[in-house]
Length: 191
Image 1 (cartoon, rainbow, N blue to C red):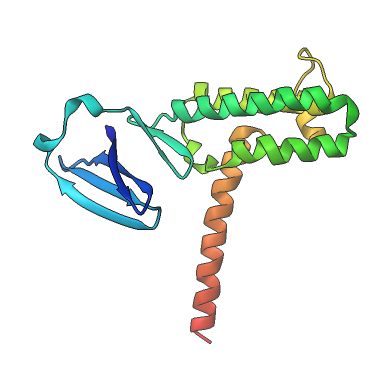
Image 2 (cartoon, rainbow, N blue to C red):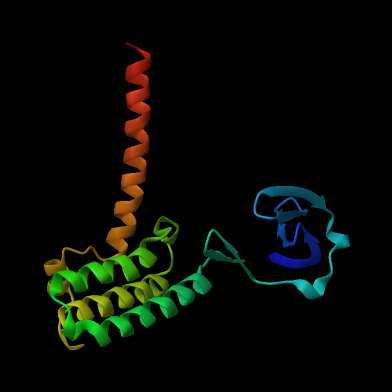
């Protein structure tokens, strides 16, 4: 369970934020962020925390984590933002050529879908389906296709991978890049 608290103290005219994280060892870790530069961690016993300040999710680097790590809050937030951008793209789509529409779609919506998408690995199919529906809607907006049109040929024509394939590609590229760097270091070390 993640417990956010907000302190009312001011440090050099900036607010300080306190987050309390529950650990498996039965302790809470109190993290105080002051002016985004100073980070202090304090171990606090379970008995010292008020019960009325509990929350079921916390945001870290723009990604929302909930207590069960299902990322439902994150996916809801991404869905809301992406569908807003897709509606705006549909409004201006008649005035754009296909290359410009594709570039706008990739920069506004795909960037949101791809941010930290390696964390989506092994999520329930229902959560992945929500993300896939966003991508399908985006693809149809880019090529001006109706909802009844099959999505696979559209994704192929745009050279876009499906969401599950994007997640796997991201994981494989992270692992491959890391192993390549290690191989280069070892090769340099043994010369």
